[in-house]
Every structure is written in C-alpha cells, then in structure tokens.
Length: 234
Image (cartoon, rainbow, N blue to C red; front, side, top):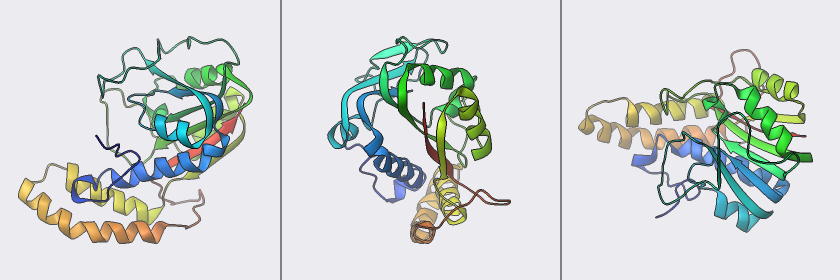
C-alpha cells in the first residue's frame, strides 16, 4: 500500500489531509540533517516515516515507542517498546535524537513527557516535534491541547531544552485552505453535495496553498496558523 504520509496525493478524497501531511513531511525533511545515530520515535503509531528517515539520514537505529493504550492503526506494525506514560523504558542519555509528530496534543501531562524525552536524549541531542493548531477533535476523548508557540516554548524551556526553534506550518491562506478541505470532506454534508463542492473547492485550495508558500509568518497579534513545527536541543 502506498504511504500517503510521504507520497501525498492532492486529490478529491484527500483535501482534508493534504496540507497537514505535506507540512509535517516538509518539516521532517528539513530536519533530516539533525537525525543521526540512535533515534526515538515517540508516539510512533504505524511509523510511517521510518523507512524514509533511515534511507535519507544518518540514523543507524530507529526505535518506535508508543503508549500502552495507543490506538492500533495497523495491526501489522507494532512499536518496539511501550510505556505507561510515566517512565520511558530506557536509560538516561540513550538516544542521539528523538521526534514526535502530532503527539504532544494527546498528552494529559506534556511536561512529564518532555522531561522523559530530555532524560533519554544524550547531551546535545535534538528533539523534533509537530503539533496541530487548526484541526478538529481527534482520537476522542484523548485530544488534550492546542498549543500556541508561546506556551510550547515555555514548556520546552522549563523542561531544560535550549536552542528552541518553533515555526508555523502555515498562515492565513493555508488556514483557509485547510478549513475548506476539512469542511467539505468531514462536516457531514450529503455525499452528492460533498462530491460537487470538492470538485469546486479543489483548485481554490490549491491556489490558497500556493499563496502561502514562502511567506514569512511571525507570531503577532491576529496571526492565524495551521500548526507548529520545531526543534529543541538538550
């Protein structure tokens, strides 16, 4: 089966997921230079980026970790380790790098998770992360937070991380594109109407995404964002 987390088609049935998955994949690709040695995938799920990272980075060992009660997306893919949400089953300074995509919003106690990530990283190790901002409730009732860049930076700083860099995955135009895609594919409108509107909206969504490319997004008053991507070092 094609991995549409990486080979992300821009098509009618994918209008709701195209931008967010493209943004996450773009962020990962931009951080591949920082991935090396032993990598920990936090909240790994079905590990859709594993093969890509192993092929395109200096990572030698990829370790998938998920919570014991995690939703099973693919029964054929099991995490290498599970944990109880309190203590990760690894020694201090065990990993050269770690990453978690769309994970922190599901953590009831994000500071505890970040402290564990910090503990198992080697000094100088990098943590890559993404979180949604403009996204519907998902994995209910285990959807806990939507972060602003300010709150996320404070949590990372309090945990001990430094060299914290956080960027928006998209601004006003991308936000409108994402909302159009979400509304037309997920809002519960009749199927015939959904099909017609999806055809109408597709070029509009494409245009809005193009308008957002390379725009510098600053975290100022009234700025709209689709999500956040960033890195922090131990």
